[in-house]
Image (cartoon, rainbow, N blue to C red; front, side, top):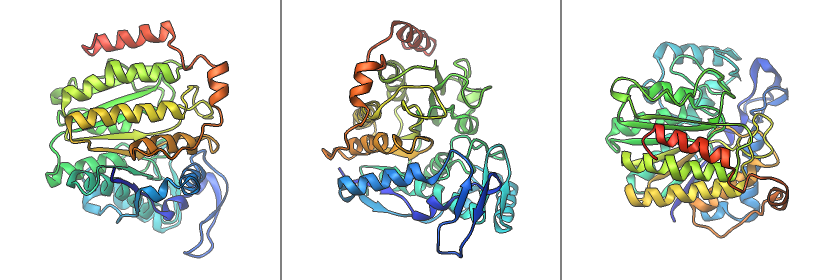
Amino acid sequence: MRTGFFWDEKCFWHAGGNYALTLRIGGHVQPLVAGGLPESPETKRRLKNLMDVTGLLAELKSSSAPAASFEELSRVHPESYLHQFKEMSDNGGGELGLRTPFAQDGYEIAALSAGLATAAVRDVLSGKLDNAYALSRPPGHHALPDFPNGFCLINNIAVATETALAEGTAERVAILDWDVHHGNGTEAIFYDRDDVLTISIHQDHNYPIDTGDVSDQGSGAGEGFNYNIPLPPGCGHAAYIETMERIVIPAITDFAPDIIIVACGFDASALDPLAHMLCTPLTYGMMTELLMETAADICDGKLVLVHEGGYSEAYVPFCGHAAIAQLAASDTAAPDPLAEIMVARQPSLRVQAFHSTLIGEMAASFGYD
């Protein structure tokens, strides 16, 4: 596999702005942050470091990418919002929406994060890479066009998608969001469109609490092209794999996109502090495998995973390693430190009847029974 890995040290430097004491030490040292948000650089940095230690990173085509241009960003976000964001960023930071603080250079780092996703999609669509992973930070799937929220300032995947459509390298894009929180921003951006399929698997009414219902299936030309799959707290490996097999894979197959993009959050993992799910590295590896098989059948294997949430500094690296190793068809492993405990003490690896019934009901509502 020619698997790309897009990352940049500067993305680790995104800081919590007015939610934290941020001390800048010149332009060439990562800011020191005391306190702040659960969305920290450490989950992402430790994933990259684990890949260094196991040798997986050496098997990938690793690079940075240019920041998304103003033109690319403005395909999703109003120019007025981008100008306000840039001005506030230049003046030391602040907050524009809900739970989206940023420090100085926040605009430039967010544009870089979107640029990593855009480059990953561009290189896969061009055939330069078979598939790719973008370690984007700050994340993007909660960002509405003019209202950032939930740690998200620029909708990275939406920018990458609109760029591909504008450049004519894709005509239909499928976006699967398996972050534990509802992908409300991505949904809103494409809600009335039939050229972008949006699917979100999330913990029911976690964040945002007022979006993500099964009944929200698009409007106008986009009716039937938005799938929400809210799962109850306590779902784990078996529920997620059944959801993939009974709803997600059939929906993507029917849509027949030119590329599949994943909003790849690892906050449905068993140790995440912001959710109550029980997924493991095995879950993320198997979901990636299912998507790779589907992509091979319908779009020449074109698949891109873009990093979103995940707040366990101890467990995100192992979940991410499993997904990326699968993406690269690599045997390089980082053994799950919780594997024995999860199998022996948790029900998440076994199908629960009430979960299966619920998934079946949702599948039927989408026409997949």
